[in-house]
Length: 108
Image (spheres, rainbow, N blue to C red):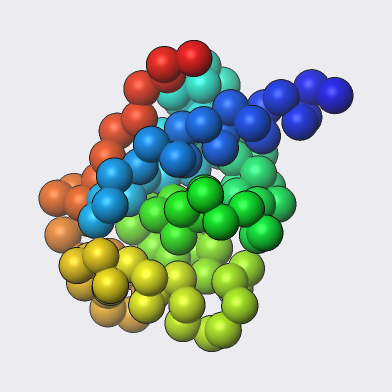
């Protein structure tokens, strides 16, 4: 199924996000050559709950907001995971987002 293949490509990129860094749904979509599919990237991240090798907490929206936090067990788990990596968050927004942003490149 084409969707499964897309999701796997998203996961390949997500696994590359370095510790202490974040990227956005749109940046992943752009790296895949499908710049207008940020929402599909979000669906892929939502679907990877039981996949411990995918750091879904490191994927945020283009403004550094923790828009996916409601998909994590526990109300503040996404924020806690990011803070444990040294990323400061205030009101669900990453402080110094540009400093922590990681630009993915397609390497498939």
